[in-house]
Image 1 (tube, rainbow, N blue to C red):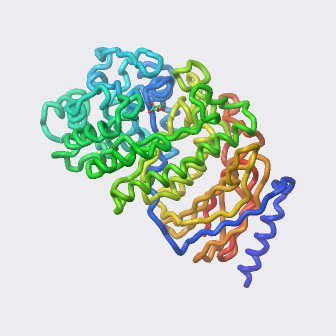
Image 2: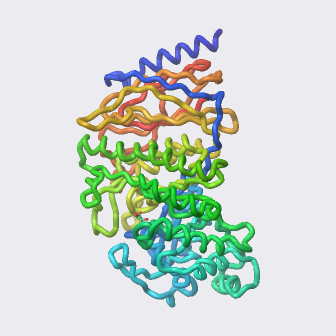
Image 3: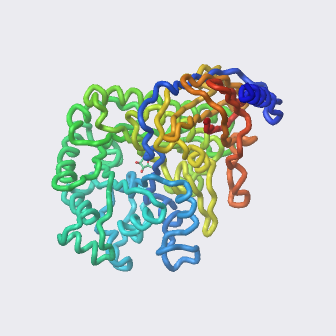
Length: 516
Ligand code: AHR
C-alpha cells in the first residue's frame, strides 16, 4: 500500500515537473512487452569506423611518438581515454574507399622506410603509411576494441588478403608470422571480422552484383580455409534501397558469407552535390535529415526480408557498417570534416533504436566516422579535443549492451513540417541480465514536448532513473571553448508504478531510462 502511494505521488510530480511545464506537450502512448523477449542485442551495434580520410586517422588518432601532443607510441592519449570510456566494441579500418587502394605491406616494418602513396579517393593527399597494421592493433589494444579489417578487393588480390590474414593471425613459424615477429609482435592478433571489399558497386570497382558475388566466393575460400577460427567474412552489401544487390549476392553466395553489409547516410537535402550545412540550418533541414535517417527502418526491414528467403535461420548477419549524417564539408572538401550538433545526437538515437529493434539480424553497426570525419564521436584541433553530442548519445546507450530486446509499440502524433512527416517519438526497449528494463525515447519534434503514458506488460516496476540529452537550439554543439554545452544530465521526468510508466519528454531530446 505504502509503495503504491509513493509511486502515485511520483507519477503526479513527474507530470507537474516545472522544467518542462511551459511547453505545449502532445500525448503519446507506449507499450513495452517485457513478457515477449526477443533477440539478444549485440554489443557490436555500437562499433565505429575510422578511415584514412582527412584528419580521421592522422591528427585524430595518430600524432607520432615525437609529437608535443601527449601520446603513447604515437597514439594520442586524450582520444584513447575518451574512447575507452565509451567502450568501443569494434573499429572498422582502413576504409571505406581508401581500403580499396590500401596494400598492407606498405604499412608494416620500420616507419621511415614505408613508402609514401597517394590517397586518390580523398584529395590525392600523400599517405605516409605511418599508421599501419601494428599501429592499428596498438590503438585497438589501448581503447579495448576488437578488429574489423577491410580487405582490398578493388586493387588487391586474394593472395594479398590471405597473406595479410596470415600475418595478423598465425601462431605458426611461417615466413609471414615470423615477419610479424621481426616487426615487433610475438603473439598473433585476433581478427574477428574481415570485410571483403568496400562498396564494390561504386568506389570499390563499379561492379555488378553478379561479378562481385563471384569474387566474394573466391576471396571467402582463402579467408576461411585452414584458419581456426576464421574471421567472420563480411560481404559488400547494398547502399540504401538497392534491393537487387542483396537479392543477387544472397542468391549466389549466401553460404560463403557470415554477414552482409549495408550503408546508408542521412543527407538533409538528399542531394550529393549540395548536402546542407552541419549547423545554422532551419527546421526544414532538421526534419529532412531525420526523415532520411528514418529510412533506415525500411532498408533494414526490406533487406532482412530478402535475406530471410535465402537464410531463414538468420545465420548471416546484417552489418550496417557505415551510417550517419553527411553535410557540406567544413574545410577541405576531401576532408569531410563537419560540426556535430544536437541534430546528430537525435539521428544517433533513432539509428541505435532501429538496430536494437532489429537485433535478430543487425549484429554489428559502425558509425562513420570516429574522429574528425562525418558524424564523428570526437573532434580535435591540435592538442584540443571535444566530445560531440553523438558521443554522448552513444554513452547514454551503453546500458543496452548485451541486453535482450523487448518489442515496443509507440502511438504518437506525427511531427510535420510542410510536406515532410516523421513520427514525433521513437523508442526501443530491452531487458538487462539483472532483470532491469532499459528504455530509450527520442523526441524528434524540436518544438513540442510529449507526455508519454505507457504500459510495461509483464513488469512490476518499483523505480526509475535516467539521463537526458537536449538543448535549447537545434544546432547546439560542443566547441573547443565550450566543450560541455551539450552533455547528458540526470532525468527526473519519468515515473513508474507496477506496470505503468509516465514520461515527460522534452522537445528535441534523447532519454535513456533504467527501470527496476
Ligand atoms: O565514409 C566515407 C565514405 O563513404 C567511405 O569511404 C565510403 O565507403 C562511403 O561512400
